Every structure is written in C-alpha cells, then in structure tokens.
Image (cartoon, rainbow, N blue to C red):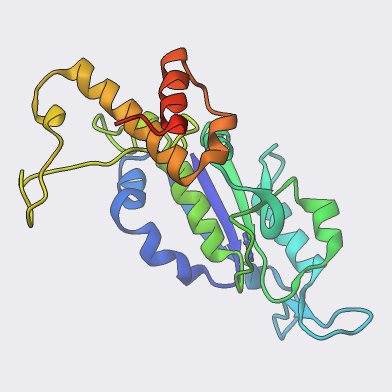
Length: 244
Ligand code: ADE
C-alpha cells in the first residue's frame, strides 16, 4: 500500500513511521509512506498557506489554491481516495480501517488552524474521517492513528503470529483478558483453563470472557455483534446474574 500525507508538519511523522510495526511494514515492502509539505506547493515568495476567514471571526483558514494544487499534483490522474482528517468526518472504526486496508493507495490531508476553505472539500476531497468527538490542533495525530489502524490490517504486516481476527472490535466485541508468565504474581494466579492444554475449552473460555467484558463495558456493541445461540444463552445468564 502507498500512503501519502499532505501536512504542514511532515517531521511529526518521522518517529512514528520509523519504528516498530510501521517500520517493519515499510522494511518488508508492504508500505510505501511519504509525508509531503503543503508549503512546497505555494507559489508566492512568502510561501503563504493560510489566510484570515471572510466574514471575520479570527483564526486562520488553509488556502484553497495551495491545498488543491497540492492534492492534484500528488494524486496525478489516478483514481485514488483523498481523505481529509477532520472532526466533522465519519468516525474511524474497525470496519472503516478494514475497508481502507484493502486499497492500494491513499492520500491523507491534514487540516490545521480553524480549518480548510470549503472549496477544497468540493474540489479535492472524497472522504472525511474523524478519530473521535474531540478537537485536535491538527489532523496529523489523527492521520497517524488512522495509518496505524489500517497498516496493521494489511496481510503480512504483523507476521504469521498476528491475530488481528481476535482483536477487540474485529468481531464487534471487546477482547477478554490475557495472561503470561509468571503463573503467580503478587498472590494473583492465572485461570486454570489457560494452562490445561485443552484448546477447544480455551476457545470457549475466551469467547465467554469476550462476551462478558463487552457486556460489562460496552453493552452498546452487543446489539450489532454477530452472536451464536450459545453466546445469547450466556448473555442471558449474565443478565440474570447467574453466570460464573
Ligand atoms: N482534526 C482535528 N480534530 C480531529 C479529529 N477528532 N479527528 C480527525 N482529525 C481531526
């Protein structure tokens, strides 16, 4: 996958994109990443990227001529999705990340200041994504969150041991608890089933823990999760207060 980001702060991406899984993805040739400086697409001697809003009100707005030129020159003739990161976008979820992870190329545009001139949306933006109902000072952190969530779903990025299918949200549920050595820590043990070697039982236990955690913390997710008859029976037990 190729991801190009248009930003006023390309250096913000350096640390995140050159370590851990993002670096492995690039090193393995699974991700080609480039951060492009919007300022490089200005044509005036002051390299001005923003201006005051018509109608007053303060704050600065990213100029349409610069931003549209930047998008068009990065995009070329290709039919590549151009996504603006903004608090007004559709919300980033596992489904959105999975949908984007199947695309060969993405262009991400990071807004700054009070926003972007509306004509940029009309002329150059195909999609708008928000990472949550709060306002960041710019789209850069949101773009990095989106990139991380998308790239880890590209086959091969997490290696053979990757268990993305079991992630919280991948099946519409939260994941249950995990344990590793030592078997006892400050008086707390590990559930016996996990050390029993009985894999079918472990799977059943994990499914129940996942249902229980979702029921406790995010019951809203249960209405759209894909549930079996056994799952529903267990949830009914939880509701009745007689599940272990
Ligand atoms: N830019 C500012 N706030 C944002 C948010 N919540 N999501 C995406 N981009 C943003």
